Length: 294
Image (cartoon, rainbow, N blue to C red; front, side, top):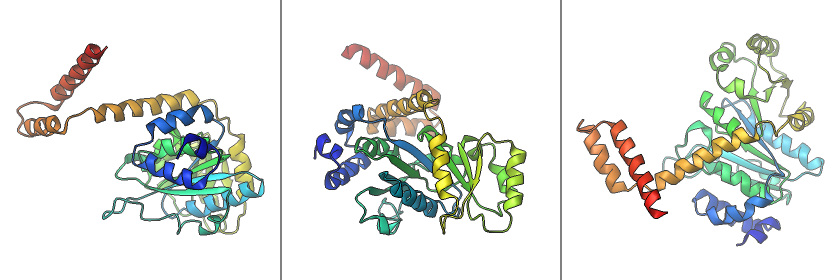
């Protein structure tokens, strides 16, 4: 499997590359593919469980395909406590798209990652971008306020709400709602839509509010049009600043000796040393080692 095969749209090569991304073994491949990224629109879809995110993503995919656009979908699922894999698999989600060569769906397990995103999600978006997909949609687990992390990855963040949330809007407005580029009231054929709209108006959020009924496609074409109107370059530097910081953090973690970590943890647990001293010592030791290597 080569970068050229991935870029050519070879699905078998793309699937193998996606597996390497998830196992954190695709660094060289992604470096080779990176110059060919930056064309896809990366959209994050998040919100509370039961808001209808998967159905909405399914309908967005239908509209995009009717418009002749290709779609890559990354469905971030809770990790199985037994296998560590995604509980909701590709075959369950949006199965009718699997015969469409213009759609690629990948389920990813969070594996305990915070913020509703798998550690490798950002790399997976780059992979699908390089493979030539016009639209890459990341659907998060749906665990609440921690999902603000999606805004640091996606060019456009869509937060999905449903009527009947009531005071929940006030409870989460300081986090999830404030990162939204677009707020969507899904299941807008239910009672309580007006109340939810008033709650959102009181919050004075910067994002426009759209209404959809994902089960029958109502308002979905308008949502996709609104997504494409969001100016995506404004926060590009901010997104990459966060991503580079996370990459540096991951690389530093790879340098830690498990023996050293076990010893340090035991010393801290016995209160023989404080954790701040331990971390500072390791950082200084790492910096000294880097200087000597150069």
